[in-house]
Length: 372
Image (cartoon, rainbow, N blue to C red; front, side, top):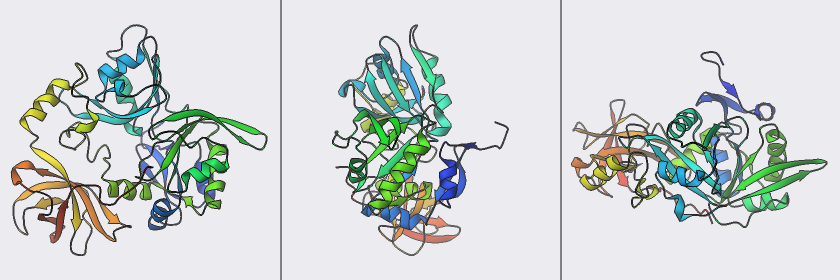
């Protein structure tokens, strides 16, 4: 790929046929919207939507003791789950910064499948490969599989109509087969997602992804849903307070600061960055992630300053911000200095290009989702 050239996913032709608008994301040319972000967002909250997120990375860690090795490297405690389950976890550096947040799928004691973010896949693979013992292989499989997310209250109805499994526990997965006419597609069906609604993420092979997407889209449309792009994916995850790497998490933002301590196995004797994170946890972080809900008219956006009061001292920065289609108001996530002493219910001001926007401090999520 030459400098500036965007990668194309395996379903791009289908998106173009649907009239999608595209934008660059993580080095990939991705569908942002089809019928409009608000309509797509609402479909997911009230019925069902289908996303192509094949840009997400994929990697495998295989060999004798692969699961134990992953558990010694990534933050969360893989020992709390079992084969056939998935776990949200973090790959941190020695200083506790987040190289990436990802999902680990425990296939067997000798096989763990990872789904990191698109732009960080190579960094995660490199961090693991650098310390992998002899016999453990860490393989970048970014373009071996697609990822298709079916999310919303009617997501189980969609998969049921195609004969796919739906009744596994949350954060579980099953390897299944999708039969469409004379075609048969092996697909991993995962009870995971990034919207706060009940949903599934399906991993077909790269070459099968378009066929699987088209079959799912037909069923989604029949259930009253529609295709959704990255615009709706962002508004949905922001309403839930879910972090996005490069915004709420980064090599400069630790899980303690981002309220992701729940994804750290604090009692484990070993994982990347353990000493630094334990020290920060004990001392307390110098900044902490909060939610902001606009009181007046206006939308707080990423990188805007947070002030104690209009014209006052800067006490933080917005990491993400958007208009909430559900709440019909502006919302944001923000890192705020702990020395500012803010708490839930307090009022702060976001500096929107010189115009003060009053916001209430809230503890995310902004809306009540349901993954059940």
